[in-house]
Image 1 (cartoon, rainbow, N blue to C red):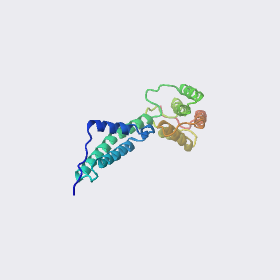
Image 2: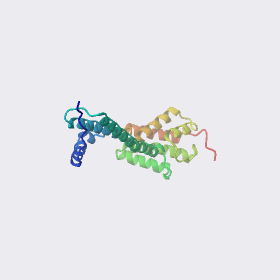
Image 3: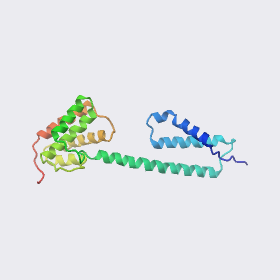
Image 4: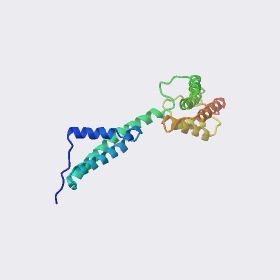
Length: 209
């Protein structure tokens, strides 16, 4: 039985294959890197199979293909995981260390965003104003890097407010901050109302000076 030798494309052919692949519509619709690599590898193997004279590829061809696939997975992992971790680090803290705005300044920014129709920014800023206001009133300590959930727990421990309300607000903050969804006018209005309630609620416990 004769076996076809796997075809290695010359530079011009390889370039054309790459151009054909990049021109496909999937690259215009936000497919993940893993999806793109998988589709590209599948197409490449099909082209190699069809490029021969109709026989099958010898075992060494499959071995080389497996090596290429593993290399692509490693590359994708090295690119995707650090990027995701970096996004999480950026989105974790409610108030960044260099954010020196007062609660009123943050509220003003929230109102400006709301007037501009940017309900995502408005919702995020109202929650930040809520947290900064509690820091100013010494309801919670002034601590950089505090997450939304940590803020909800700390505030609920110091004021007469159900934790469920603060937890829901923290979950909304995280969902918008991580880009899982966009904010709505209802999100902004609800966060604004909660910020006002927290601001007007007397603390039952203050952080020790």
